[in-house]
Length: 350
Image 1: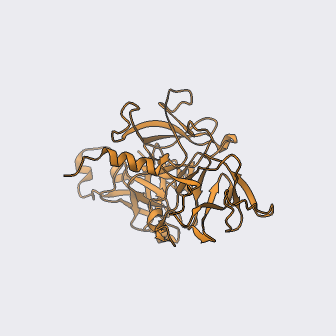
Image 2 (image 1 turned 135 degrees about the vertical axis):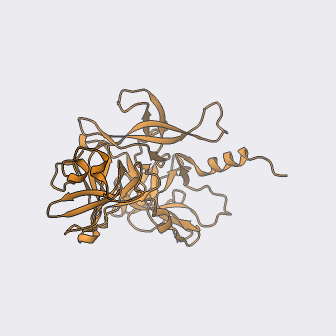
Image 3 (image 1 turned 30 degrees about the vertical axis):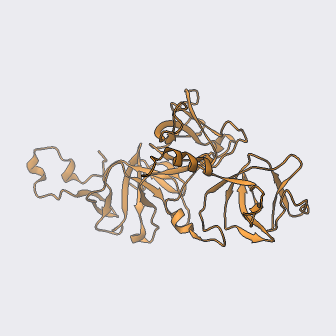
């Protein structure tokens, strides 16, 4: 029990000592005020750092804002509620909300009443997306049975796959961030069956040891905000993932700084001052904006590793007999493959 609980709740004695007290009674903090427990605030609820200035959420050891700092949660990442949320109902801190989180500590949910930001918002499920590409055809992220990096390998994920965080993040002594996840998996012997949720552990972030960041949190409202009418493609959504394909041995697919088409089959070579890099079959890119029609080609803005630029995706005229240079990836596999499998698994219509 926190030492700063109001004395009426912590005093030893029979039930008669608590007669007349509100069931929502909280605690009293000198120079801040008295709190009450927020009704129906559920243990096990996930919250997301939504700070407007993209700042960090500080988790402290105890309820007091002066207690020891436990961890800082970056923008977009998640916290799991561990108990009832408390709100100040009197004093200078009136309206300020604090919440216990798992595995330990307290975080401020809302400080708007005292001139601060809204720190946390509820989410249904904490989603993450694989943003690391190893360049290997065997996959990009190893999923292991336990938190240990030496535990049994249970699956491999590819860049673009979206997973759900299953419990709070854990940190190794070296600072590597490990995350328990739920992900879709199929039995190799029954590929047409619907996927089932599986659980495992992945490395979320190894930057503390000079490694890459393997996952990024997915904004639950990002899709709704990003959907707009594209010139020809219908809707564009952030986090669309594409894989390079159909580039012949004697061709090059250029990523350039300007929205200009340099198609592999055109023989057109970009000037060195606008060339970012050449892409190869199997490279994974993230679309970061709307595609544009430029001189008969669809050109899209993409990001790969730390590089950004424009690249030709396909011809505008789909009727011409020429394959596209990209295929869209959904949860680690081509969209067309998923579409055919879903179609094959449906019962025939009458």
